[in-house]
Image (cartoon, rainbow, N blue to C red; front, side, top):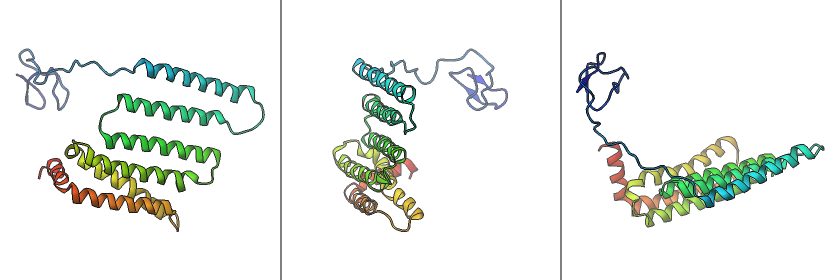
Length: 221
């Protein structure tokens, strides 16, 4: 084993100290303790690349028509088209290359859809339709799907903490933020909060042992 001249620790299977990154002194490095993963990286299939190419080409055409061929002052509609295409491509990429973790994938879809709705609301001046109607509906649907997946997913014990954090983050945190900004919270956000509390209660009552096992493992209890 080699020795670090600064940290004075013995290290095997490497040429540099894991603490200070200094070159190690001593005999030749041994074989690494952990095997190197040579698994090939996931590649996007052709049935994704072809629609992506066509959609991005359409965005370029829309941008050229919007910015170069129209001379009157107006809101650039091509930016909305570009945002929608980007959201669709990111969603397809997450479905094809993302993990099989249902709550994580749901959260990614929720964040992308909410960001797209907010951008369209701000850019097209929908009068707060996204924050008052569309986003709370998306959050409520996500909570219900999350609750269903908790009973369908066989790997619930491994993802129990993620289920709870998603439940609290989607239902409670937005309500607190809106309460601090407005005098009266929209009704749909109140419904979302109620659904969040009910699904949280259901997870605790029906999946309590699995949740406690997850907390015990994470916190080393």
